[in-house]
Image 1 (cartoon, helix red, strand yellow):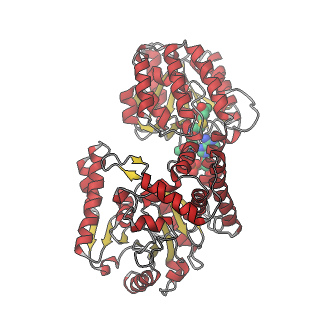
Image 2 (image 1 turned 30 degrees about the vertical axis):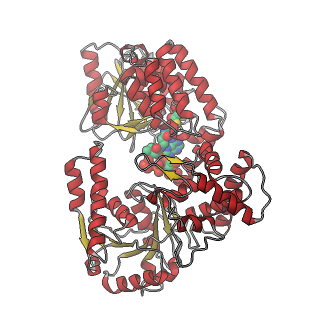
Length: 623
Ligand code: CAA
């Protein structure tokens, strides 16, 4: 074996040269990997004893993409497109042997190879769009040529991954191999040599480009709706695929390169790259190391079968964990179970689950009216309404019922977890697990650490978040924790803006054009305007939201809130009564009325969140 450099080595096995990349943790295409690949492929081509080349990676995955850390730095060493050209132009067949996740530049390396083989559990994707860029090393030109315009476009615009069985059907890979990947890939390469298979360069394929008609692209753009608002990368990807269809390969590559460079320098991409690493940083807790032993969570209890409780339960059923769900009334219990079933059946009707999957998940669910059924659960999550006295009563009861060593969690969105914990004799086992609605969909999970929460309870909760495919973020105790507290700051500004002359739909439009999935008022309607409102204490004379609630306009669920909602499509529209009410309340506020610019709306809404975020950090509520 020859070491090409620190991260790439070259070994000849019979007549096959094996080029091995070893750059933990994910074999990202750092300068060393690019230079090493280029040199190894060149050397193997010059070696008279070598008749084929296998590219393989050590560790948990094939190359998972460009090294994102190098993006802001001046380019050094071999550029990735040159490395891929060297592979594609190799006179000897190159077989890429794929395992783990071949993503981004990693998949582009594979697309430059003449053959692609993979382990059965390997996954493939071009997720660049999630970083605000596009596949910039030939991916937008090669993928449509290999698997067809339609599927290639879907994969690049969504950033989704495909599994090996689908990849084989699509022609993305040539074979699925079992067992020792390197040995199998070497045997595959030898068979290519013996059978004298011609070198297949993806750049030369054209038969699958025919579906890319102008009509096809127009329909595709329409199908995206407003999903990509505020993000320039998806539209650029569409343009690159149009170029793949209408231009020569080399001109298409040039087009792709220019689009890639422009996107890489965009503020959107910088923000999305920052977010990628921030999300991973958030997964680490400074004073809780990997050495902390986690508690086993084999059975989960959920108290409350309402929207939140049901959604929370689904997260665990999805990953095969049995759940006991508790309600106080049979009717509420039946309704909750029915909603869970309906959700799964809806997913199944879209072809994303089989009927057997639905039954398997429902089979893991035990509905009960007896809280004693939670005795042997490893984790119990309370998801009842926000009332401290009732929550304390529930936790006091759990303390006497649930086995020692279990984690007792509250899904509270505002209340003091320390006070809840004080209702038990085991505050070290109490923590907040704050899911966001709909709890089976939203990715964020705030893990609220109380002053006594034990380290292994924190570690177990963080790991559990990952198991159920959430983004777990550790937060401290304060009113609204991090997410809701920052949103409340924005909502207060949004309210001030409409008191000074803006309309709710102006504020929402500006936020949505910026790239937020939903504006502040639309979000209020979705959540329900009556959260925290009661008819007895309503102040409809002075508070606009209270007035709307008094009028029965409680948000989407009642068909009207700040907006009116179409009962079928849920499309929102402006109601002149609300416009008149807003004007009336603005007048009552006594604030001078004026025309407010979009820029001012944006700055006041965003800066208020930034400011609240800074305070949250200062107070040590977030790491
Ligand atoms: N560059 C640099 N570092 C990376 C990286 C990358 N592309 N991908 C992952 N890492 C780092 C992470 O930051 C993390 O580092 P720390 O342990 O120091 O925090 C470590 O690798 C492990 O990552 P995860 O915690 O995410 O591990 P995982 O097993 O859950 O997931 C993964 C692995 C699926 C590869 C995931 O990390 C991932 O999706 N990575 C990004 C893949 C990607 O976007 N590739 C495209 C890059 S852009 C590109 O390739 C452009 C082009 O056209 C040339």
